[in-house]
Length: 382
Ligand SMILES: Cc1cc2nc3c(=O)[nH]c(=O)nc-3n(C[C@H](O)[C@H](O)[C@H](O)COP(=O)(O)OP(=O)(O)OC[C@H]3O[C@@H](n4cnc5c(N)ncnc54)[C@H](O)[C@@H]3O)c2cc1C
Image (cartoon, rainbow, N blue to C red; front, side, top):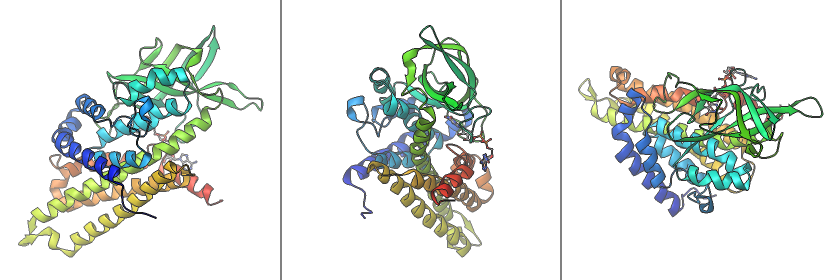
């Protein structure tokens, strides 16, 4: 067991940390206020080879591992969650299914565009009637004259509606299997496909600069070879994609909590009350000490899930545990950071206010806490 990061991982962490501090931090509050999508930052992330971190160089990726990806996402979320989720949803949800299950043709066409960040990828699983119960897909696709004809709706989809969104991989019911069960398959739908409509962005509690929209399909037609992987393999495929995605979202929780601690520490040193810095009060010190300890534990869980994946071992349980732990931690750490800021914590000029709003989704997206508990309990044999 080696707790030290490799030179490569440390170098990457330093690069992303500097980028976040120099280029994201100065604009994060304004992006949050206006809800403007961070096109320029995404372009810079592409230049820095951060839009396809865990994919091989042959397909345009950075050729790094999942641990590197987690470290990068952590450093981004430490400063801004909207940018971090844009990278995360693009990498783990948008690009991953094409990389893992796509045909040679799909990979050749899409991976260079996605891994370079020229185009954003999205994954459309959630529907009005299918969130936690993701198998309850209502969107349907039928083969007609060599084309899939898609009808249905998706909701809460990240990255599908920006000016640089390239495609969305969706789950759809493509028939019934021999036992009468729904046959679920994944289909690749390029932006601009007639009949594929992208709704207006939601007004969200947080992640204001991230793109989240409803999608609808009314007789949308794509060629038969837009099936991603085998017909009927969609359920297994999305479980795999979600397992991987949880590592990224867990890294977001660690990063957000660390960012909240950074801000709380800074404020505790600056702010005086009763003639001394508030950081000298034991009640404030206890909060800071608990935050730092919980963050250290959550980081280890997250890195462990990433390393298990990189070693080709089963990481589903570790990823669910990391996701559960870090989502809760992010919410608590952001709340404590606001508390340490007193009234100023409730005012938007301090980043902790944004962190507080951005944290809550981490206990909901990519599987709610209750879903993670189900996954963990199943692994415990109950
Ligand atoms: C900002 C944002 C971005 C998102 N991005 C994407 C995206 O890019 N792609 C995508 O496909 N989805 C995306 N989602 C959807 C997200 O993954 C779902 O919202 C989430 O999985 C929960 O599904 P739901 O909203 O339908 O809630 P429900 O499934 O309706 O859950 C409601 C409540 O019931 C609980 N519950 C449900 N079933 C059980 C059970 N069996 N036992 C105990 N409790 C249960 C849940 O834990 C929750 O507390 C996004 C959501 C948001 C808000």
